[in-house]
Length: 268
Image (cartoon, rainbow, N blue to C red; front, side, top):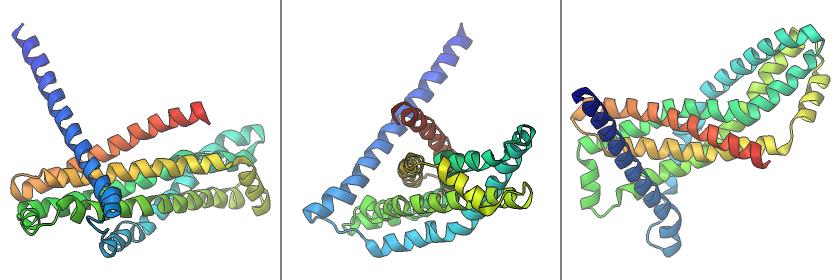
C-alpha cells in the first residue's frame, strides 16, 4: 500500500509540476505576442529590428549549410529505399512522387525544426540563462526594459521569418537528392523526373509544410526563452536548462506535427 501511495504521489507531483511549467510558458507566450503586436500598435514599444536581423543571420543564414546537407542526404536515402521496392514493379518513376510529397509535407519542415531546435533553441536557452545567472536580466528590469520585449521578441520574430525559408530550402534540396539518385542510378531523365514531381505536388502540400513551421518556430523560441528564464545554480543550471530546452522542443515539435497532420488530412 505504501509503495502504491508513493507511486501515485510521485505521479501527481510530476503532473502538477508539468502543469505549472505549461502555465508559465503560456504566460510567456502571451507576453511575447503582446510586445510583438499590441505594444507597437499602441506606441508602447518599438520592435528592435536591428537585433531581429542579427538573430535572423545567426539562426537562419548560419543554419543553411547544415540544413541543406542533412536534407540532401535524407532525400537521397528516401529515394534509395523507395527505388528498392518500386523497381520490382517497374514503377521507379514514382520515386519522384514519394520524395516530393514527403519532403514538402513532412520531412522538410520537421527536419528543419529539429535541426534549428538543437542548434539555435539551445543557444537561446544558454544566452538567456547566462544573463539570468549573471543578474543581467535583473539589471535590464532595473533600467526599465521589459526582458520579454528586449530578449524574446527579436528571437521569436527571427524564427517566424527564417524557419519557413529554411523549410523551403530543405524541400528543394531534399527533392534534389532524390533527383540525383533517379538520374544517375535509375536512368530517369531530368525532364521526366521534373514533370513527375510537378504533377505529384499540389499547392496544399507546400502550404501544409509552411504552416507547420510557424508553430514550430513558436515552440523553439518560447521553450528556449522559458528555460533560460528559469535557470538556477550557475553554469551547471545553464547546462541543464539547455539540454532540457532541446529535448522539450523536439518532443513538442513532433507532437505538434502529429496534431497538425491529423487536422490537415481531415480538412484538406
